[in-house]
Length: 461
Ligand code: HEM
Image 1: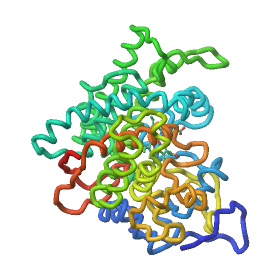
Image 2 (image 1 turned 120 degrees about the horizontal axis):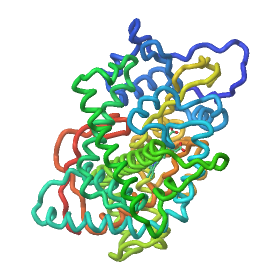
Image 3 (image 1 turned 180 degrees about the horizontal axis):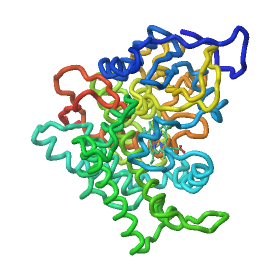
Image 4 (image 1 turned 30 degrees about the vertical axis):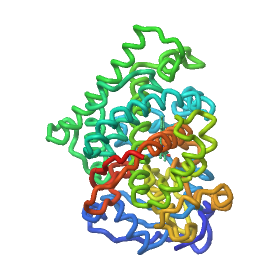
């Protein structure tokens, strides 16, 4: 694998194109991406061509990046040359111009406005509400355990994560709206995912079945979100939450309040980005634990010693280092955000290769997190990699499940606290046993999903 860091300076001899698949005339690698699936396409081309893979998506030139130095270069040290680009423009059809997709002054203003509820300190105050939602799920699971029924764990985790976001960020019980929101989420993400791998999209105005389903999904989201806004405007709320912050925000210079469309986009972003990713992280964690009884046993030992059956409170979280390491290792092997797009604004050079202006860049956690130069036996599930001693020695950007640079995930503390809490509370009560079935492969649905439902039974501990 090439090791040269991105330098950004023009070195002699003149930089040349990165290696990669030639692809077909006109379409480039689009058919191959479809045939192999995005994850395999990335992995196999990385193994064949090295840390920078150049390919074409129709007329667009794209590069996959796997080396930590190159990731650091694009996300942090030369981030000013990389915009979110056309990849995110497709996601904007669902989440609009919220924090994840906006850029420039609008992004800076909104990030400042929304940061306070997401500091570690603020998130710790939400653990009580998070545990209430987890307890409610565990009560529901009691009858499942007694009857020996099968749980669709990925769906359970999505429902839980959505309920938690509703309760903590918007002080709203979304329980009666969970089903339509999750259905719309699935519809919208598979639609966007299909469009990410295409360069010609049938305009939304043409009523194909896929376009109609997608528009229905967006209508569902709009209904939920505008109802949230309306309900809050009619009713005062005691302890201000993120929704209050959005509703009462005014521009520093003009004094103008945020319009409903902007508020809608921010809420949509939080609802989607805030539940899909955590749910996927939890799903893969249960899968890995079920397949690694030795790790599960160590987790149980830690939980018994630190909690002795209690619901963990804020102070307990610090006493659960192994729980955290399990989550970190699960997100190494199956990073919920396994790749994400950028676009080069001006010509550049990375690792000695020419990066033309306008080309797409795809840093990939899925590749970097299993880079053999940085991870020993990369395919092995081994939470011990994340002891603080070993983490300190690790190369910068060898691990970046939450992205990096100034666009690092705003929900990083929220997600870590939430996922650790769910793991601790559920694992104290149940073993989650995997039903026999075909092997589960990771597939891209924007985030990294299991190839089919994760079916498990509960065994009381
Ligand atoms: C395990 C869970 C999560 C993972 C793996 C994750 C991952 C990521 C990644 C990789 C990015 C950077 C994308 C880029 O640079 O283009 C990001 C951004 C973002 N995430 Fe998360 N995320 C998680 C949970 C959450 C939660 C719980 C929330 C909200 C409650 C959230 C809200 C956001 C937002 C709003 C952004 C855009 C931030 C900005 O650009 O200023 N995420 N996330």
